[in-house]
Amino acid sequence: MANKELFGGAITTYIPENFIDVSDIREVPDNQEVFVNIDTDQSIIIEILQYVGDLNEDEKAIRHHFASIASDNNAEEYNSIQQIITLTTSDVPNLSLEISKYLLSGQQTISKFNESDPNSRNLVNIFMALFRLPNIETDIVITYNIPILIGITSSSKQIAQEGNLHEGMEVFKRILVNFEIKNWELFNE
Image (cartoon, rainbow, N blue to C red; front, side, top):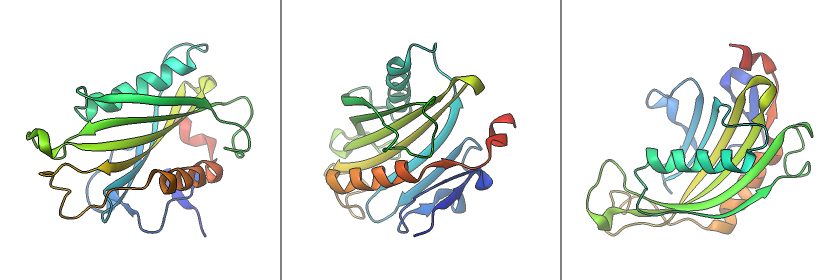
């Protein structure tokens, strides 16, 4: 199994083979790498973002990033954080001990393509990892979105399947354990 090169090879990690690179279909911002499984509507997003908050506000930072995604998804009606834990060196072995690493598990109700019917909302589980790089004022956020309940009038109903959280967590663990920054010059651009 080969890892996928991201950001021009500056970062590598595991991306399942059945996920396609969205930049092959449409424009993606330079600070993002986005992959989607068209059969399941699952997506993986790796983002390089501005550092949020102070050094002692790591849990607030991951909550802020989750709330930002909820806002982007118009998921204000329902978004919930189930758990936030600190990741260990065995979870993310290729990042130094000095880098704070967190995992959030949460859910949001999301409508696709501005679908307005309440029955078109999908319940999406979100696994989110946050790597804090204060010395370069950067947060790296990885999200794995897994629809676990597809609305009966959602445009996803015809093509997507509801995801399995256990399988999703296993995939996410592989993403994290294989995550590696190969070229730190990426953050100087």
